[in-house]
Image (spheres, rainbow, N blue to C red):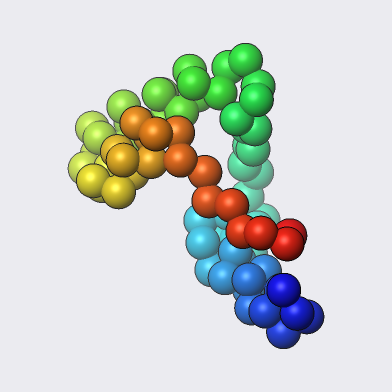
Length: 74
C-alpha cells in the first residue's frame, strides 16, 4: 500500500463512527477481539442497536461470523 492509499484509508476511518466521536471530543472504548469480554460487549451492543432499529443485515452477518475488516499492509 503506497502513501496515498494509506492516507485515503486513514481519512476513511475518520469518516466512520470512531472518527466522528474523535472529532466531537467524545470518549469511547475499543475492545479487541482477543479480550475475554469481547463477545459480551459485542452482544450488548447488538441487542441495544436492534432495539433502536439501527442493526442491519450486514451487522448481523458480521456478528455471526465475528467478521473483522482486515486491510493487508497496515
